Image (tube, rainbow, N blue to C red; front, side, top):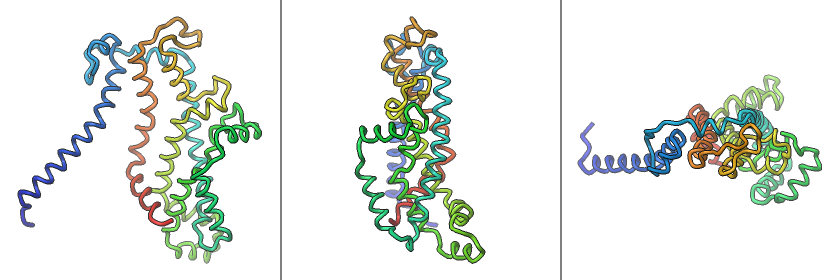
Length: 289
């Protein structure tokens, strides 16, 4: 293979340099937040910008976890995210598969309603009235069912199903499989990239969601972690109403950085396991509508 020209090597070096700079631009703010959460409030106020703290401290994390509400809310968030994502994938798959079949009666009309729902919605008050009329107030179901199927994700999965060879389904029908058996034994195992992509989409949506909990959950003992972390930030100058930390004064800036780290780490830990499927699933599912 002939050596590349000088201009080609210079262009490659320039591209690598630019990519490295962009990577640093994305990484440095995160490092600043992590470093700031592990330092003292005095050092952060004195130095302003910290990437490597000299005065290591866990004061911010000790304050955040000083109330029993935070560990409980973390468990609630994990459970809502896990079970909510499973419900999302199950219902989205059940709706996407028949819509991917060209012979489905009323397919165009149903797809029109799906696209319409993606562009328009009833709004906050009608949605709240529906949730209340179903008796879901103060229930964890109110955090899952209103977003059980996201129209955009449904279209991605439907498009992915359409890419699968029709011969597989025909062979399965000859062997005596019905539609549900085809879906769960053939289609879904072949759709791992798309399902992993949607799992990431739905998981991030559930984990970061706090507004629905504020609307539908009146019992503070049922709040997910995002609501409590929001409360910590809002009350950073006064502390919790919880008696276990009453009278304590939080390190406001370092505490806010600790809050960001706590709310980010779970998704950061999950992403590497799904990253190899992410680009493939999103791209293949968007090729054909």
